[in-house]
Length: 211
Image (cartoon, rainbow, N blue to C red):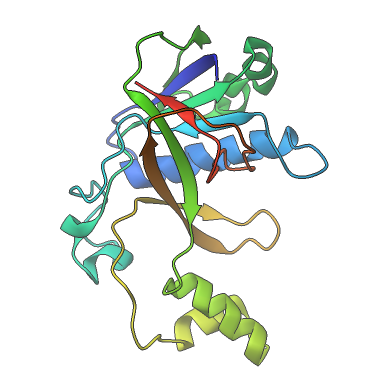
């Protein structure tokens, strides 16, 4: 990955950070979907330079998924997002400012820049889908019992639910319109690795520079 741009989520009394992440990342996802090839791969990877695993959450204390297990157990994404690509033209084609135009009062987007030579290392950011996720189990329950997702989510109570420390963003499915949590896991590695990114800019294999 040779080029990047950085998006900063600006502090604003009109909207909290978790809600702003939902709006920003939904738009980024829409833009990446437009760049998919016929196998669902995209040439852009994401990074969260202020990512903290297991730190204090900045989400409001009344968030139901966090108060049930204690907000201090959760990681945070921070307030910045980086988009990486091999070629400058790829990020120009993506046109982040276009996708974030309606959020221009809430975000700041830099110009496209070369990745600095001095790096901390490399990292993968991948989607984590824990077996004990209430949303995931509810979807299975709905399919098995021929219920709507919303009904299953209300009725189904798993016996155990493993506490998670991975930060997440609340999003809406483009196909079905259901709300779900996109859990994002960071893994630091010593060497870069090639691979495919999906429509959320995440990959279990492909690395992005860490600096």
